[in-house]
Image (tube, rainbow, N blue to C red; front, side, top):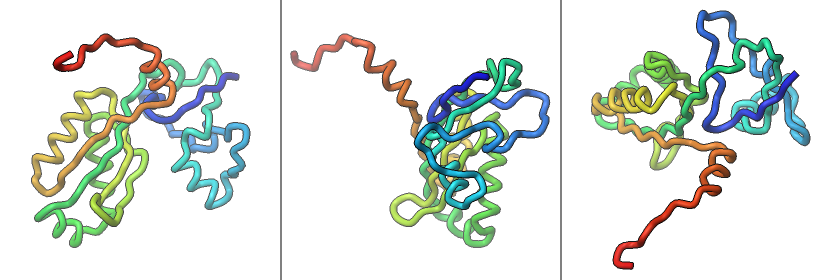
Length: 175
């Protein structure tokens, strides 16, 4: 058996050819110190929100093993103009389904989707197979003029560790 931490930027990709997707609890188990159980509402909520507190468990014959990594992005969006009217007439669940369908149309997946009060109407986390797919999706959404969408690339702690271990050279302006 092997275990690999999963969270943030690097995600295993689903196997090509379909098949049923295992549930979160079949593929992940709590890391030491995480006291959440799958049968509780709290456990399910924590599974959705604290994916980095879990590790994936599988075997060498795991169909996800050796899959490609996908870039993970935070989505921030605001409905504008006709988008607000469309949201009011369709409702939140239909709009979420439309967003999920559009993400999947470029090979991505939607991890979570939330409406919010304040300066931002929608927050979500999506994964795409590459930056070109993420850019195509963002351009498609923003071209409607009904939604203003912003994608923020997310990094794992391991990605940050790799970044701080590098020593770039730089000369400040005027120095």
